Length: 179
Ligand SMILES: CC(C)(COP(=O)(O)OP(=O)(O)OC[C@H]1O[C@@H](n2cnc3c(N)ncnc32)[C@H](O)[C@@H]1OP(=O)(O)O)[C@@H](O)C(=O)NCCC(=O)NCCS
Image (cartoon, rainbow, N blue to C red; front, side, top):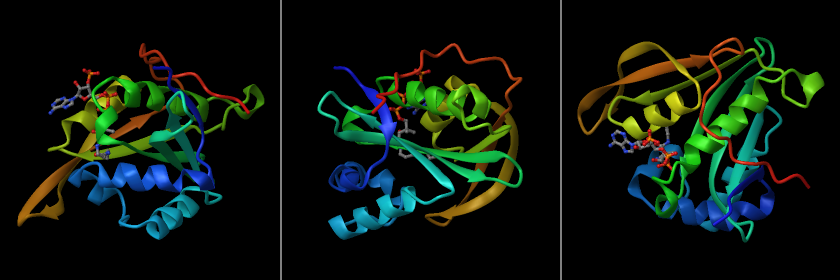
């Protein structure tokens, strides 16, 4: 199946609801249980300081997303991503993250967003997220010890950064659907 990227739109809310219902691990990505919750989540994704990229299937249905929250003052961005459980494990998130991060770090004069640093973090017990970060060219920078309390256990978070001068990732980016 052909997958492409485009900006998230308000009419993606039903697909966002389906993604949040697809796996219990989505609970940490937001409080989305109803269509109204999904519509609120999409409004948040469309905020001025956020660039939310949808991964869509051949029918233009959102199956996952990569968001970059922009810190204008520091020309940096915080990257987060999630994928509907039925579509995981095909390398799609790695390819989407490469495309979104490459564009974010491209100078604005070349149709990019002109950011100069990207950051992300993931729990040590979420290795799939770390594999996506590595595939998208991120460099491990640190470890926040005992950051989260989950089921009575303190969980470390691994932190990553990517700068424009870092080695370019070799992962093939997903193509953008330009409208
Ligand atoms: C993290 C997430 C986006 C990955 O989506 P995905 O579509 O499976 O990602 P990809 O298929 O592109 O890549 C997954 C990578 O993780 C690896 N992986 C998956 N499970 C793993 C595990 N238990 N241990 C080690 N690696 C694992 C895969 O092998 C793959 O790496 P590879 O391409 O080098 O083989 C998805 O699991 C998700 O949405 N999780 C819930 C939300 C979340 O945790 N988001 C990140 C918050 S920091």
